[in-house]
Length: 67
Image (cartoon, rainbow, N blue to C red; front, side, top):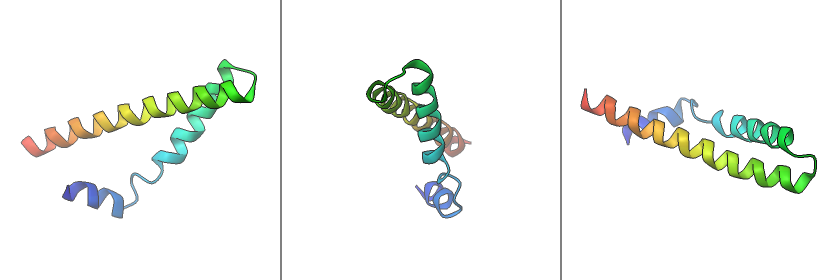
């Protein structure tokens, strides 16, 4: 938990949210033409990306703790 506090105080994770929003909106816009399907697809893809990053973060945290 200490590493998470260090990462947040050094602003390493604050860029993740705008990046996920931008990438998911662009990805959704390449798949659909209307606003509602774009937003639905962007929300789903954004959740998928945040989940993937969270799992990756936990795995790397676990590996770094066991070293």
